Image (tube, rainbow, N blue to C red; front, side, top):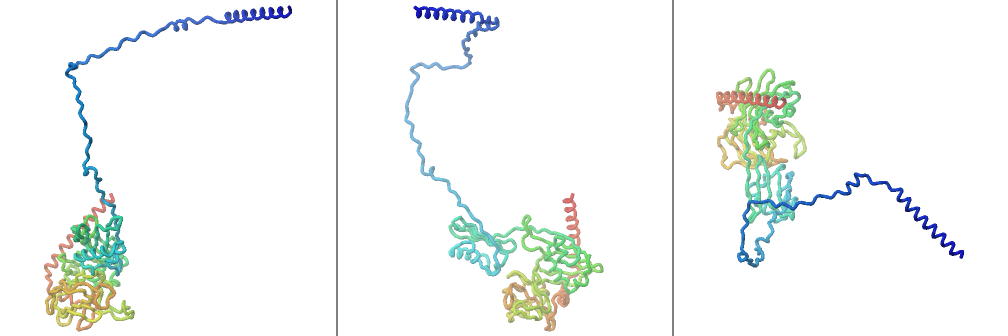
Amino acid sequence: MKIRTVLAAVAVAGAFSVTAIAISGVLSKEPVPPAIAEATLWTPDPLAPPRIAEINSVRPTLAQADIAFEFRPVPLLTVSPADTSLPSIEPLLVTWSREIASGETLDAVLSDAGLDASDRAEIALAIGAEYDLRRLRPGHIITVVSTTDDNPRRVELAVEDGVRIEAVFGEQLAARVLEPDPELVTFAGEAVIESSIFAALDTADIPARFAVDLAQMLGGTVDFRRDLAGGETMRLLWREAREGNKRIGQPELAFAELDLGGSVYEIVWPDDGSGQATIYIDGEVLRVFAQPVEGARLSSVFGRRTHPVYGNVRMHTGVDFAAARGTPVQATAPGRVSFIGRRGGYGRVVEIAHGSDTLTRYAHLSAVPDGLTLGQRVMAGDMIGRVGATGTATGPNLHYEVLVDGRPTDPLSDDRLAEAAEREADDTAALERLREARSLLAERLASEFAQKTTERL
């Protein structure tokens, strides 16, 4: 009985709770806003059917019978063996180059480049056919172009004056001589002497080697120690063979003017290759002089010195000109050949008599022209031999002596050779050469000044 009463009470309470929750939920809801209610009624417009553009084109109408399909076999792509070969690729090349050192041979340099004996022998034969390998000297350059596995392709020997001898490997080893085609350019410069001619030329950016030429020409006329007090002006005109911006060979003096204040000395060198220069003082011919070796370096003067071979002090009876082996040697004055042969330490010698009391001696020669004979008349500037190292010599040079009545005299101060040359000189032509040289010097100096002024601006 009690249990029934309890269950009935729980049921009535649950029903009452449900009814209360339902009534409270209904009473708590707010009405929906009109805008939202209106939005819920929106539906999108129906899509229009697509429009097909009309194109003015003609479509052929084909009957079904006109359409036919033909199946043909497609042949496979055939490739010829030539098409499959790879392009030839040149092997990588390596260039090796260096100067020849003193006492070295061509074979020694090529060995240093890594070439084997057979290749070296072939190269020596090929280059030797075009150039006397005995004339190799320091400063010559060997260049070897080879593959990475040391197979030579080209060997080049660069010698003096821009000349190159080239040996090229192919089916046969071939050699050829490549000579430059330089342009002869004239330059002018001015220098002020403060301490020495050499220093003045170097400061003025003029080839300092011209100091040797001036010493040869004026050594017996001007005392460079006493007559130069400082501040003297020197003007030079010279020629250079050039290939582009590169100078070929050594520059050559054409004209020099030395103003000592009291006197003006001028020298004109010819451009005919004779080497016979004319010296003027205050516009008058002083003497004519031919250098024994053109452009050579004066390596030893007249007087007592320590002998370079024997080591003791003894008289040096001439002057020495250092030059490359084979450089032409010229007679310094007109005369007759009085001796050709060997004289002990002098080696191979040529002697020329100038009158009855004066003789010039040219020693250490490597060769004498085949046509030169005893008693032959020669002129100043004629070639009478080539520089060598025969006899007692430490290297290629010309030993040049002047003997008067059999006694050696200083070749740079003796005037007898000048007198011999003057007897055959044409003063009219000499003065005309001086006027031309002066005019060209003034023109070139003005051009150099204008060019430097333009560069500064």
